[in-house]
Image 1 (cartoon, rainbow, N blue to C red):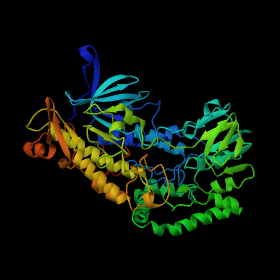
Image 2 (tube, rainbow, N blue to C red; image 1 turned 30 degrees about the vertical axis):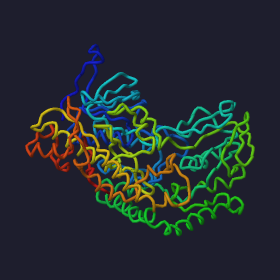
Image 3 (cartoon, rainbow, N blue to C red; image 1 turned 30 degrees about the horizontal axis):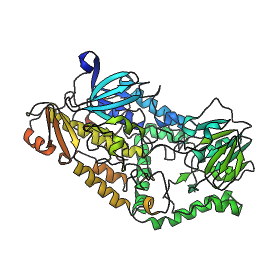
Image 4 (spheres, rainbow, N blue to C red; image 1 turned 90 degrees about the horizontal axis):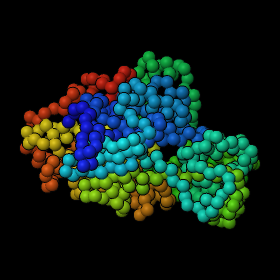
Length: 555
């Protein structure tokens, strides 16, 4: 399975293209995590393709004022790369981005990373059983593609009549214009999601007037953020078990909360009372409080954390328009309820392309169909990782792997376990006595069965039954983003690849053979992965210094 990077003939045999065993797309948490795990598995023949000029993913792109994580720092980090020196209990964007840069350096990933290399198209070559990849920096081929672009990578700006003629400044929260001075400006903030509730308190003291356009009010809980003391950081450095205990406690508490979201939404009433009390402390005006009170069950939309949002809305120079933006007439913004507001700048905090990820338009599978076409009726992937018709392709943070109350890093590490075993199985099949290079394709029946099970569990969750419309739902109203269980459950479901769920494709053979049958025929004498580490990843720490724990650690 291993080997070194090589070249293959280009189109018509006139060109030369680099070939790698694995191509990873994206260098956020998912992409860097995949790169670390590849090295820990003894695989060095891989590249990480990044469209920007630095690593970091969404934590590079989102640099707006007040940008921070709503998951505690010690849980929002890799188990194999703990950070004893987090500055705050809830870290800001600069600290998280610095952490990702540190991971890239510590685990020796820089030689594998190709910056300014946007992926333009990926096509499956059914004859050669490899992916042809066209990038902004040239072409290459890969046996396996791991897509780690993430769901929060492509900003979504609504099509508002008159927006093109607006004479002032316009930008999305994920594309913040740091050269534009907001001081003394009349600013409109569109949206009330996680970004908006951080931006509003951060810019309200600077602008002349801030108007927030709210289509649907969010539930907001206090954010108990504080500086982590020097004593705590010393303990975490000198006594690693204290750091592990802190992480374990944070994880365990969130696991205990899951059943209220997934099975018993009515139990969330107490949390709603706490959120209302949080609002009442700062919002004394009954009319404003009524506009800010959601009519849906808490948790149906993402629960937001802020202790500054409501105080900012109570300022005399901040206005709330409890209606969505309908149109723009010159410099005047017109809401759906007829409210008119003249502004100098518009900031869109309107989220991302989550259920219609642009990368899907660029992936062409075995039947000549794009992934976007295959998912036109809704995203679905076997165990959130592989899609029928797209052999040797995997995604990190795929369909139904999102969370409503815990750290996505836990889900990413589970998918990295699955990726590692997928590659091991390919290596065993490649090196089997049957001979010939192979690819694994998810069986449509397995994908459909997994998706039916997930959607059946989804029906009773608060995300589906809570009475709201959220970005968790696709255009058909199906929840294709959230995992309806605990992170521990997902870890168990993705610990290893079930070959009965896959078909084997061989070079020169169009028929598909059940993978489990091929594996049985190969027997126990299959060749091991060249250069692989010992089966127990705890036995070695390839990839750099500072490794503590493994991707098998749940907490």
